[in-house]
Amino acid sequence: MRLSGITPRRLPRWSFFLILFISGALDNGIAQALNWRIQTVDGLDPVGWNSSLALDYAGRPHIVYYDDAHKHLKYARWMGSSWEFQAVDETADGREPSLVLDASGAPHISYYDFSNQALKYAFNYGGPNNMWWIDLVDNQGVGRNSSLALDNQGEPHISYYDFTNSKLKYAFRSNGRWVIQILGKAGYGLESGADTSLVLSDSGVPYISYYDKMTTGTGQLRMIFKTNDTWWPLVVDAAAGMDLGRGSSIALDTQGRPHISYIDATQGLLKYAYHNGTDWEIIGSVDNAGIAGTSLALDAGNGIHISYYDHLNGKLKYAFRSSVQAPWVIQTVDPSGNQIGEFSSLALDKNGKPRISYFDRTAEDLKLAVTLYQFYLPILLVDQTGP
Figure (cartoon, rainbow, N blue to C red):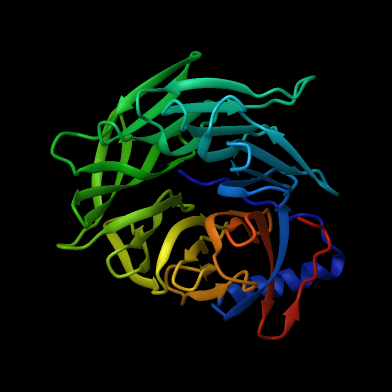
């Protein structure tokens, strides 16, 4: 169960020597700073809630997000010199999307239809009219907090929250039909299945992290995975009187082991857990700035990257460590004002550089942050390739 390898983009000849040197520096845990370039992607109307970011094979960003001005989902993609925009589903008040690109770069989106309280799925193969194909997956008070993944055959798998019955649900498409499974069991918490995050292993095994609210003001971080047609639920982090597990984001390392970022809402901490092959290791406090929402990605060397919102200071922040033994490096990404950084979504390009989409609540804009590594050596790689 290994993640796909990462292929570097073409760079000037001299840069390969720098890359070799820099790679060694990262492996040795040398502290790094990052130089962020900030761009407003969409700022014409109040837009940018619930963004979800993905990068195609050429490293071009694609973002789906909520257009509050027109009450529907909007999709943006970088065309090399400018952004192209499309409305995804103008018939529904679509929210909380999850975006994945297939091998050809076509976008697939799961989302919550607020108007009809339903889970929907959309994809676009760029036909003559560039039309979106919309499918109703599940209805009757379901579809919050969906997370989408594609298997090796390009078929969609979605984890989501049934808020009517307070259960975690899972849907996948097989032979043109949606198969729906209820994963929450009797005796679980009051809100078993919120804040889901789904990842598939290379062999197609689903892993889902989620929040399980036990009583008022308390909760647990849980994970469930499937082997041999059996689902196995696990408690990752729980403590008496604590509210743990909100805003979870899951990824698998090159050994197929899960890593999860999440929130300790009781103490206002960013937490991180990973499985060492035998048991869970819990990092109690990555940052203690009052956290809201997390987005996690692992690079080819199993370096850990997390974006999150510091709601006490109104800033988008980023945490990185080059391995599970290395120290955390914490940065403020966009210091330009207050209430900047909600609904962040992080993705890594082919060189392992993080990019983050997020909402600027003050300006009501969708923004994108792109980073370059800048070491205390000093070395600076300059990138003029745009988003």
